[in-house]
Image 1 (cartoon, helix red, strand yellow):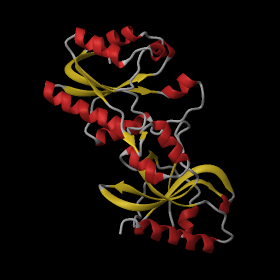
Image 2: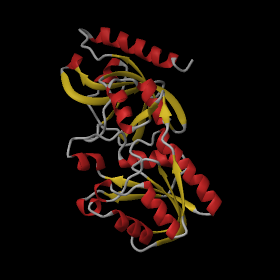
Image 3: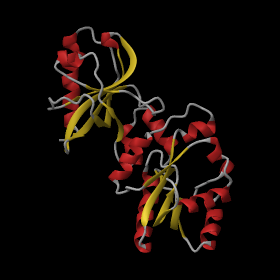
Image 4: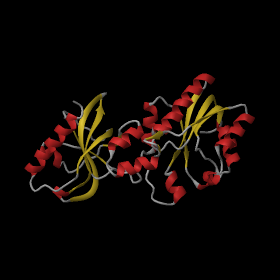
Length: 297
């Protein structure tokens, strides 16, 4: 963005890296405050892998930036400001950050979580933001953290559940089924020869994987929900060792190559295992599909 956006706005502050229940509460409060102030809502988020840069470890994100934008669109946000992560930005002091963001937007109010931190070394606190807002005749609304089963809803907790294949609890904290979005790529076509054609996606390098296994899931095509079985991991029956994401979509015969789709993971079904014949594998896939469909009945 060049220059200042002169549209009066309420800024929702945070990382929003998994758009979980806590993030959603911040966004809903921002929408409510914006209505009171006759302003728009701007969700402030980051491009790149912020956690990996800060921790200097190979930290994964639950959703990529494009996936986050899509999810924010689902919940009624069409104005997302993306700040690319670099060391110049991260070295900005807390007051410098507040002055910088006010040069970007005509801010009428802020909404953030009670644990929100900002500026170099995360020295900026909610109290600092409150003083700044008051001095500039802006409104600040602070949202309490959201707890589930007596524990704070957090991205790290969700990643632990995903790694364990516990989609029931991960999805409850996310407020929607965990998903992987991407462009369908051509593969070997083995599924088609078995009578179970698959849509294959590539896993992004920094994307948090789920536990390897076969999952009941779904996909929305042309506005219609269709059941799916999703293989996440290797394909030992055919000698494959690379991690793949492939989904057989029930009752669908169209061509999806080159199209962007989103696979939703509903439930862990079983471990990946090697089958000793194609016939044995076909029987198991039919059982998997029946089990996936039974979730909807």
